[in-house]
Image (cartoon, rainbow over all chains, first blue to last red):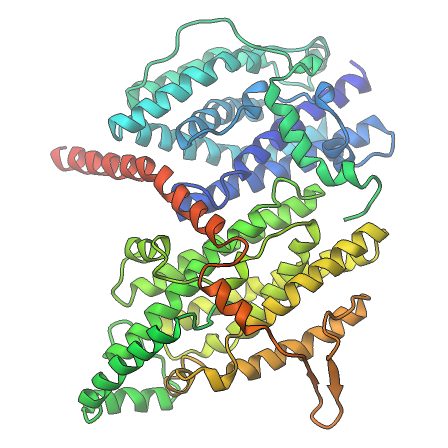
Length: 251
Length: 338
């Protein structure tokens, strides 16, 4: 392992939280009910807060005097390391729920292990983040049940969301060479080992919700090289607008 | 904020007639006398207490209008969440807009204690029957607008709302205590955004000044029409729903805000502004009440966008709310059968 490996790893953890936080914030003021406006904003706050911690650490590891903001606001697509799943558009509450459910079920397993990382900083961040992610998992699992076992219309929305999002789930379990090296050093989580327990948890909720698990299919990947979907560029052009338009300005 | 009386003159006249007729009937009643005595004694009126119908109606209108203003008010600021210029600013703005949603929720709940349903109140908002504060019909064009809204709009709001913490209706007064704490934080973060921008480059200072120019006058109009044109204020004062007149509160806000603007180098967009050494108050130029009433009527920049956004969110979310209800019913039936 090297500092470069650790930098990329912290970056990917930060980018995941940042991009999903940015996406969820789009619901603020536009969700199906006032209570959901409050809830979804809370999820976004948790995630942006986590992103700040991971990106601060990535900047420190990189050692070039950058800040978390520099990393969030001054990198382009090829340098972003988030899962493609997280940058997919919200579309509707069903699809948003599916994405959060797939991801937070994974992250709950992931952070449980990251808490034992030999890297003290990552282990500390994981210890804080897991409390939040366990709530995100509970929130999204409950909504999977409500929508799956609610009305025919809601079931159709959530089933479609599941089918649209499934092709991005393979990436959750893929590891870069750098991550494998960190894993051997006891720093990174062995993501591949989480596939079976993740499937078991997903299956249990899908059965209870009366939803059909999508069949095995080609998985779309690309984050290690920054080969994202078309959606990330739009997220970045919006998110980074002020920093790009007024270089060096303090806000 | 958001206590401005936004009924049209025709509505006011009709309501006043209505109030007058009912007042005559109940004037002599013991209930009425006891009710007013409690108010005069600074006691809170609680949901199950007897209250005159016009008092209840006034509160429903004011509280629901306030609630609507909170949730419509999420939109102009929400417009900048995705573009907030740093992670810290994004967190603060998210938390602030979330606070507004929370205020909306307390306020709808407070209104529900008066025997109305949230769904009916939302229906009134969506059909244009109920009003919300005109200030949210102005657009947020630059990041400085987020500073100006926090500093001026929430600053005006908190000036309006502090006296409401002693409003005679208990649930409203208690909601206001929490709301005011949060609003004063909003006001400070807005001022901080403006301060940082005024310390920044020429383009940032231009944005800050432009935001000041655009938000100053509408903020002053948030306090409502001048006292002479606010005929219902006297009754609200007697009921201790209102504690100070529109002009008194407006003056309080002006006196507090002008020195803040000057301290960070902003120019007040009012050539007639001056400090009166005798009264110890700032005096301002004429407010454009024609613009105010035109925005109230729906002719502002963003009236259509704001209402469309609310109506769309509610309509698009109908299937989600229906699913949640259907699921809850199924669960209830399952538990009953078990």
